Amino acid sequence: RAKEKGRNTYRFYAAKMNAQSTEQLMLESALRHALDRGELEMYYQPKMNLQTQRIVGVEALMRWHHPILGMIPPVQFIPIAEELGLIVSMGKWALEKACADALAWQKHGLPEVLTSVNLSPRQFESRTLIADIKAVLESSGLDPSLLELEITESAMMADPEHAVTLLRAIRDLGVGLAIDDFGTGYSSLSYLKHFPLSTVKIDRAFINDLSQDADARALIDGIITLAHGLRMKVVAEGVETAVQFNYLHSRGCDEAQGYWLCKPVPADEARDFMARHLRNRIVPSVVV
Ligand code: C2E
Ligand code: MG
Ligand code: MG
Ligand code: MG
Image (cartoon, rainbow, N blue to C red; front, side, top):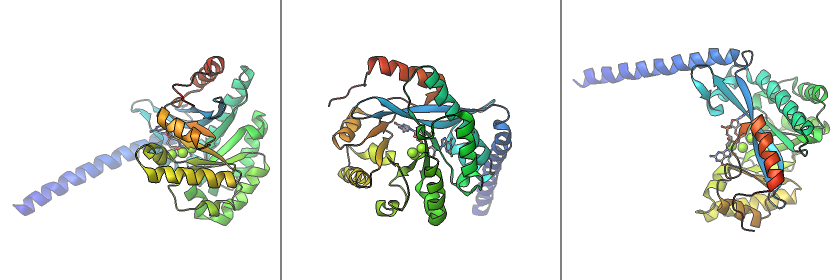
């Protein structure tokens, strides 16, 4: 009996595994063609300066519209793209598209904003990374100071010496560098002083917890103080409420990004949002 049951459980498990790997294989082969078939799109999420309440930047976020499965979230397809090595070409495309959109907004008459593009650890290993960035800047004509690259702690800590060399080369191009999801990895801010970073992005887990958790607030306060001491700008990600916005403002955090202000939207919508915001300067419900 027990044996029988065990076997059935196993069969069920095997079938489930099969379904999972079939879906995985399907996604893998579809992703190989996603770029060529024009299924990728860049969305943009605005960032607001907490003092001036102006939109000062956008983060470029990749989207994949699969013709049958619909929108597949980055948490699902970015790891596959990394595994298959597709992320290098996809990342280069993202950079080109983000620079082109930034220039189009400028031509449309909008004030200049900083465009931030995420960089995968795999792109970090690519020997052509610096040449690729340089080529994209030259062909687009975007002022390098209007571009920032976001990297995670794990990408830097995998090989810190290599990271320092690469980051210096990127900085020397005039491009800014942000450490993304800060606080979730194992690095310390004292370690960070060795890297030529311009921005620290506080992970949204801390922002999410700040109203219920004094420890989260202590961590946020510490990150802001230390980052400012190292002459870095601080951006809070995942700001969803006025309470969070106000707390960050009161602590001297420089910028906020999150659903409370605006979710990631297609390029045209981002442009319209920025134009509307410029006219009305409406902040959802700030008490300052
Ligand atoms: P990330 O770089 O930390 O990007 C921020 C993520 O937080 C985005 O998820 C964004 O939609 C989400 N977010 C923003 N505001 C809020 C909020 O108020 N509440 C909540 N719950 N979430 C918020 P998304 O777009 O799904 O991207 C997930 C991750 O995928 C990114 O995290 C980044 O690591 C990666 N990714 C996205 N686009 C690219 C890309 O072009 N290249 C690379 N290498 N990675 C990318
Ligand atoms: Mg990011
Ligand atoms: Mg982040
Ligand atoms: Mg994140």
